[in-house]
Length: 163
Image 1: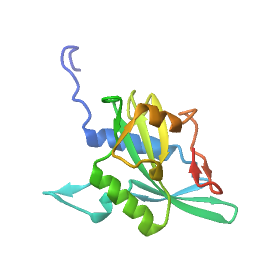
Image 2: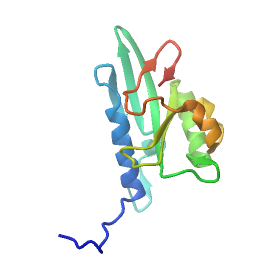
Image 3: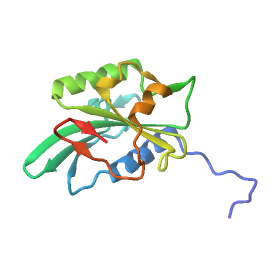
């Protein structure tokens, strides 16, 4: 048993990212959503799979006979910085946009802020096309806040909206 004065090591950024991804995946009901891809960020000596540059997740939404494929990039941040969030680097934003255009599928960025990766204070679901820059202000982000962060995700296939 550890004494009270010894601290447990903090999770790495990679571990926090994985925890947030796990939370997000758990909020897609497998009755309606098939998880088609879950990319990992494995690498060795600077070598990694090209697919790791793509959004983290790909789902197929199926309702009756209709099917829609879309991708999700997951980002968790411990807090806001300078009035917003840097959700990606400029090159990542470009790659995600290229991915969406090449695959002709919508991409959504799900951002968790505060709390812990497996229980953030707030969750935002933002269509990639609404994110022109790597930094997004808190004010702008608030338009995309998930009303009940504990409820599963819902996809409106007609409007192409993930909530």
